[in-house]
Image (cartoon, rainbow, N blue to C red; front, side):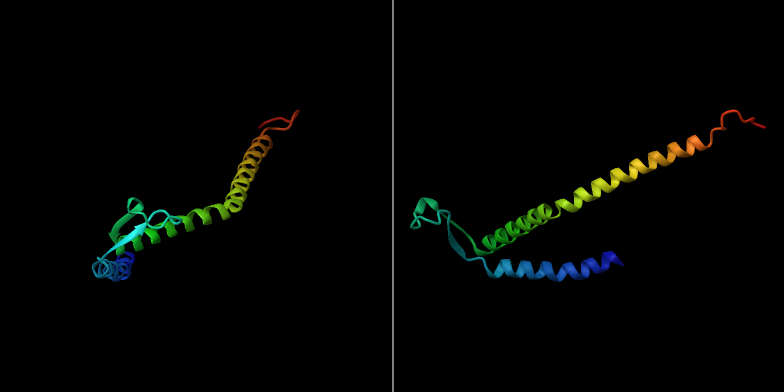
Length: 109
């Protein structure tokens, strides 16, 4: 069922992306020097859809990196909580082992 829903959602999106790329095939100049006057050696001729897709990919990566940095405190809290759980489990195991030993001076039947 999940696979069907995934294909149901992703197929139209893929078709839209392909249609966008076909419609925007015209070549546009991309100037690599923002402060220059558009010198020919610093200009790249590329299809418009490539420029748009590259911008979207850069935005996705930048958003992922920003999210990763802002969630650092949550990852640290999770590491601390896991360390506390491991410490408490070790202490519980130690207490369980100590309580299963016979008391000094008692007889075992």
